Image (cartoon, rainbow, N blue to C red; front, side):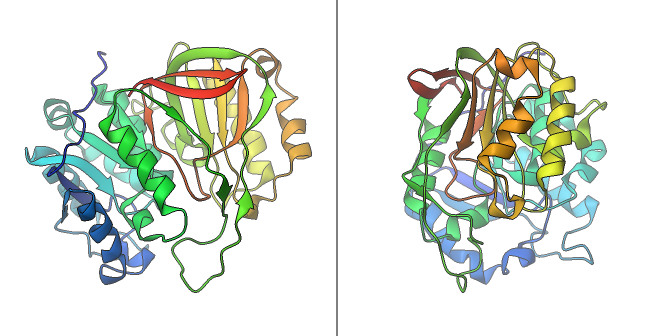
Length: 323
């Protein structure tokens, strides 16, 4: 299938916020997140919301029909240039059999989110060839600390054809959505497990969500990809260990591996990570970089799933060639 790159954002473009996984109620409700709307509008964009964004059922989500309706409405509207998810969650994959993929293919546009949104990222690419963006959700923009870096990376990914991804000086693994919790800034540094350089198409996302599409029509296995993978707070060391094994089995021709920072809840140590990575001969032949700025710590950069990237460890560099 031919790859489709969405049109880049321009001042005045309209962003539609939808909740394909958890409801906005799960991250404080509509009013508490209006600071995110204000920040996006200060960048020059117009922000509108899906009709069913306030629905909140027993699983902190909306009905499948409501979520699909908002997804379809966003892609069908010619004025919408970016579809932005509210937050992640646990049930994005329920939507996939009900989506009109011809509608999406006929109306390609930027789509951004992370975590459980991996289900939609992978399905959109597999069914239409549309490149999407793994990055902050709408509610991520209400975070005060480290927002400048996060917003700069997000806007660059959505407005530039090529750019170099970079590390912020510090990071935090605190609950960004809860302003009552203290922030603990930690020194940030990307690290190299194995040296090398490679170019290829980006695949991956949140590991736990990625496998929900394994063996279905909603996951395209690429010939020679570079993987960007990360874990969420509910995972643990054993989860990552076996998830990595399955990921490598699904992607036997991997050209490079970029691992997002682990949330502190996982309690991953450098010694343990190296112990796990040491198991795999393929990871002794390709560039492997870890503790990188994406996933479930803050701040995070934005990158194109399905886009082209060049990875090098000497000097240490991750450059989006087209996305």
